[in-house]
Every structure is written in C-alpha cells, then in structure tokens.
Image (cartoon, rainbow, N blue to C red; front, side, top):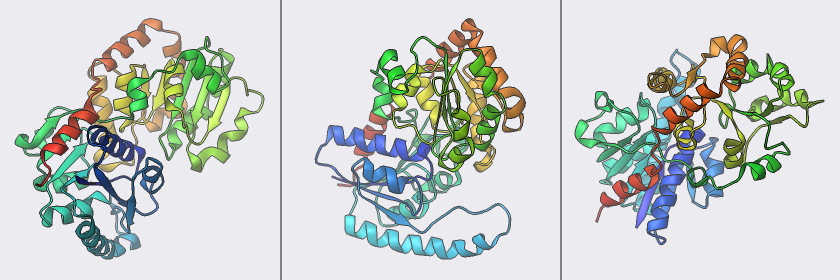
Length: 362
C-alpha cells in the first residue's frame, strides 16, 4: 500500500496531513508513505520528525501584483511538474492525498495525469486556489464547512471536519501537570496566545500594547510569538517570569490548551483543535491569506456564537480588552465553550483515512 501526500506551507496544512497518514498507518502498519512539500517550508522539518520521507519542490505562490517573483513562477511550475513526474514514477503511489498549499498543485496534478486517484482535504470555508484547481481531478473532497458545493462538485463532497493531532483529541494531561510544564500555577487564570508556526504580527502587537494590565489583574500568559518575532518581544518577560512565558514555538500544545482559560489565535486549521478542546477563543483572521478565507472561517463561528472576532486593524485597541472582559465573565466563557465544542468532529482523521483507502488504485 503506497500513499502519496502533498501540501504544506503552514502548520494548518502540515499537521492535518501527518494526522491522516498516522490514521492510515494505525489501520495498516505496513503502508508506505511519501510526502511532497515545498522547499524551505515548515513541512520539510515537521514531516521527517513525524517519521515520514519527504522531497521538496521549487515552488511558491503568485503575488497579486506584478513582481519579479511572478516572472519566475512559470519556471518553478515546470520544474515542479517535471520533478513530481519522476518522484511519482519511482514511488508508484496507489492514491494521492492533497491538503492544500503550493506543492500539492503540481504534485497532485501530475499524479492525476499519471492515473493516480486523488483525495483532497480542504480545511477552510473558502478553499485555497490549489484545491479549487485540483477539484475537477479529485475523486473525493473532504471538507469542514457547509455550502462547499459553491466550489466543488456536490457529488464529491464529504463533510469530515479537519484532522488534528491525536494528542489534542486525547488531551489526557492534567491541569497540574500542564502548569508544572510552564512553571506556572494551576489555580491562576491563564491566557494562551498563538499566532501559528510563523507568528502573527497583529496578535503580537495587540498583546504588547496591554499585557502589563493583564498580568497586574492576576493572569498568567503563555505567548507564542513565532520565531521571526521572538527577539522583539522576549525581553518583556523581565520582572514577570512567574506569570509570563514568551516563546517562539510550543512543543506541548496539549499542556497549553489544558491550562488555558482563554485562547487567542489565528483562524485557520487551529479552529478544528479549538472545537475539540472546547475553550473560549478570540480569533484574529489573517488579512494576508487567499480570498480572506480566515475571516469567512471566523464568521461561520460568530454566527453560532462560538468565538469572538477581533480584526488585525483593531488589535492594539481591542485585543487585551476582550481578553480581560472574557476573563471577568464566566457565563460568557461557558457559553462560547459549549457552542464551539458542539462543532467538533474528533474522528476527522479516521474518517478521511477510510475515504482515502476506498480509492486505492488496485
């Protein structure tokens, strides 16, 4: 059993891809996997750490305005298609899985041309251009939101939810153990701020503008800045080491989620994890993603009173105030928690794995 998996660029693409592979591996331990990603992107680090082989393509996105980088894109695309052809011919996959991101375009288009059935996983309420272009080639498209027939053939759609890491589904860590991991106290109100694997400028600026007031009110803060922003904000810990942790990456997300009373996040694949753990969330959709799809993700939650929306442009004025208001309102936190948890699909990885296995080329 040989399965090709392609996509990445962000943790919201990479971790679901690994979760799908893990779910298939649990059912069929002898299954072989081969990942195709984009050179220099997060998948080139995370996939090998998960125990799977990966090759990178020389590929990137297209800028919306005319730039020199866009002039190089046709060469990147041709290079990636050619390399994908040889990788696929060597591996001989029986099915291909695409999770979105730059690399999955040429890799899965070539797989489809070579007669390999493909299954797509679309995490957002507004699909990225790669999955939209691949939709006509797909045998099935696994989605997390309603009304996706606007973008894909209705007969191909399967509402599965978004796969997440098994440690988040299980979440067996106790609050005391989680607090000890961060050298915090288990009985203090805690906010967890994450801008994703790359960090988020607007979230960091919003927290920096009002973090002292949060700490003075008795909160603990776990603040994931992203590697690019760590040096800019790390010094703010000084004098608050027992209440404030500033780091570029969280390895124990299960501990962060368990300890948190309120979570601040972007609005991509993280939403699937937030719905599983059922914690009140303040979401800042990135303004720099295709077709503003993160705002559409958040609005799908806001309509169900399952999250609080703060826009990037409002972060400095509103973000810390919203955190303080939520911490002071236990009923509101309970309501948000119940409403987002009602949207959870904890079996997404297994459901997608079953769909992938049904489309193996004999």
